[in-house]
Image 1 (cartoon, rainbow, N blue to C red):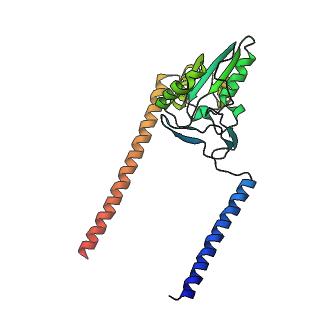
Image 2: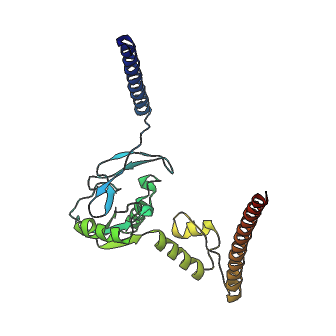
Image 3: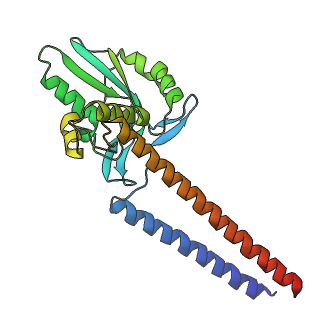
Length: 246
């Protein structure tokens, strides 16, 4: 290869690299000017695996559009003093994504609404609710959070909020309170969004019928899978026999 050819190839590669860098810079500038960004709200944590990044703020777009602010102590909440103010009852919320609630604005979260409504009916004491929820946390991580973060705020009450507990409460209400029939009734009673409604079963015969339907459905699905597998095996074997005779 001659020197002129090498020089030409080098210039082309340099031009391609320069064009790529300029294009990326233009795209990045356009995204920043338009206000679109992909923020990483989490950082590695030695004890819990990961935690919310202290002091970060920005738009969350994955499941909804909501502006998220993480305070200086890594909580999805406003700033709170470590020392509890006088004449104050502190409630700590420990939980997973249901408590973290990145999908909605802070004023729409259940813990913000809880604080507002409790203060409306507590003229003598100030109620302060602090949210320690982080998406994906299990009970082990929540226990570590309790020890490392929650206790230093000196809470008077600690509430554990999570997926399993929420479904358990909903199931208990549904079975014990037959007056709750629709999603609107549940919203009215709890002032919380409805995730699912468990069918009301008022008699043993209805419960048996419901279990029977589930068993029939499971048996039908299993039988269908067996028939499909047998058909595939039969076709495969016939194909092999036909190839052997040929």
